[in-house]
Amino acid sequence: MTVSATAKSSMNVWSVAALGIGAMVGAGIFALLGQVVLIAHSAAWIAFIIGGVVAMFSGYSYARLAAKYPSDTGIVAFFDAAFPSRAAGGALSLVYLLTLAVTCALIAKSFGAYGARLVFGDGSSPLWIDAFATTIVIVLTVLNAIGSRAVGRAEVVLVVVKLLALGVLLVAGTTSFQPSRLSSPLHVGLGSIIAAVGLTFFAYSGYGTMANAAGDVAKPAVTIPRAIYGAIAFVALLYVAVSVIVLGNVSQGDLAKYADTAVAQAARPVLGNMGFVALSIAALLATASAINAVLFAGMNIALGLGKGRQLPSAFTALVRGKLSRGVTFAIGGVLVMVNFMDLSAIADVASAAFLITYLAVFVAHWRLASETKSSRAVIAIGFTLMATVLVVFEIAVFRSQWLSLLLTFGLVGAAFLIEVVLARPVRLKRAA
Image 1 (cartoon, helix red, strand yellow):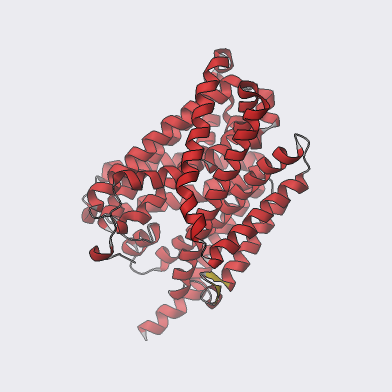
Image 2 (tube, one colour):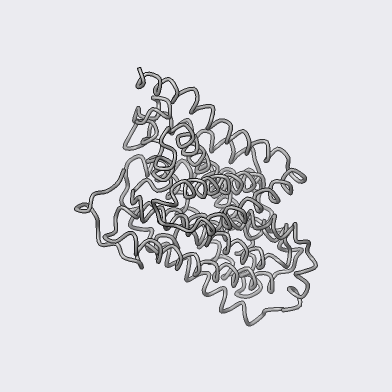
């Protein structure tokens, strides 16, 4: 839904950029840095650089589309504009909604890993990880259902805490940095580095949330592009710096052993046990904040798709606030993933799903290039880069965890099946 000029707030470049930085920084780097290292090893920082370049090209499409179609629904509005028949647009919107569900499971799993290790030590049981993850999903679902404004107000504080914690790690990490641990990054094959980019992209994917703020700024054509480019550039520099510091302070063996809590592990040799505790708490706050944001966005999108009859009526039958019966079923699916899949497998599905969805944004942008006055060359380059990352990443996933690849195809297929079953009868009825 496009917001009228009279309803727009005074959000400026800095506030929109802060929104994007808050969405990007935290969950991705805390959850996936260790997983990236497992693939790219000492070249992980190179993967983050390439991921930043790909994100910047994608950001170009988001910036141009958001400036032309300012809306609080972001990516859904782009699909609606690019695919008037709503067949493809509706299915792609559903893919994005399902991607948010997988994302929620991934971040919850990371929350559980940090929480269980903080409370029960290095030898914590996987059951405790799942218990912490399940609890945070249920608690934040309830808070979103009752419309707690306290959670929303805490977001600004949480952004500051995340940046401060990572800043302390960067400064302290320089004192014990061992360059030899990064001495041979190019010995890693190019295929492994590109495959790792598939995971790093998840850490950048939060920039898409800035498009949702386009309806709340006075001059979206100026504000949104500046905010998106600035936020991605800042986060890319931060991610590269953090990955270099972590690689230079933690051995490959420890990174492999504590892949799910790599950032907190990096604080231990630098800042001692207190540093480990502080970074673990920061990770818990960061992941909880991200889960809350995903749940909030997911509930809004699900309700909108339900009202548009692109989801079953259960998604418009509200239990409390914006929590519908359909969303409670979806939360059940999230909890199944949390309790029966490991973090690596969930990360593979979430990263692939985001790449697929954001590739679709390139397609939408291409179709709307004349309206947005955009460069088709830039769109084509961005699409090619992201498609290459997706293909190489999925080949790597097939070789290591073929079930994750199957689940990714199942997710996309389910979205299109739902669109065919639910939306087509509605279209035929309207045509009649």
